[in-house]
Length: 309
Ligand SMILES: [Zn+2]
Image (tube, rainbow, N blue to C red; front, side, top):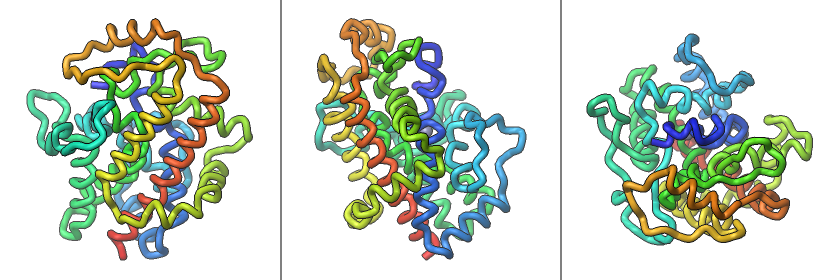
């Protein structure tokens, strides 16, 4: 569904974290893999390479195989019909619920539509394949590529939150002096992070090291409950409320969930608020995003280490 918004949003809007975000998560995870898991990940990715004919959205080819694999799931979501697997629409204002309410079990495509499922089921499904040593190597490599990507997406707060606005895609916002209006989802995917690192002149690999060092003391705390996927999603949902929406001025009201919400109407409504990013919003959001990337990296390493322990 979110893929349809290409016209409204900048191209990066449909991609979850942008290239840098996903690559940083993978590079942080890499630094925390056990030697055995790190070698097994490379064996699997190298022995089952991606289709060389696949058009890659992220043009800066990464030397690290995990970082290179981290954006693959976005490149194939239209052909694999897995667009719905990248997020879960927990409505704003909901603090506690059975997440199956917002998530169909993973299944096969019907009538050429996206395969049913959400990020929660998709992660469990792909982890099941990766752990199954009898599964074929191509299927396990694919499962690994999905996992590297989805653990990242799970930590993008707008992949776990919806306000009848397709996770912020239908909320226009002015990002500093960018010539074209952006939207809330896109700036959380890409713009805030790029501005954050550009101001410090950090390229992706250095940014990953920098973020890792900043948050290493939190690693134990963030991983103490093991791979609790539901808890990770709720955590992102709370950050969306507190930071992503919560720090915007004027306030964007919490809406009553409407499954048939219209993006064009929502865009007009929120557009009337004339939202723009301030230096304060940029700083607060940049810190929240860096913490989410570190969390995602540490937790991805924990999940992969458990596969090859
Ligand atoms: Zn994604």
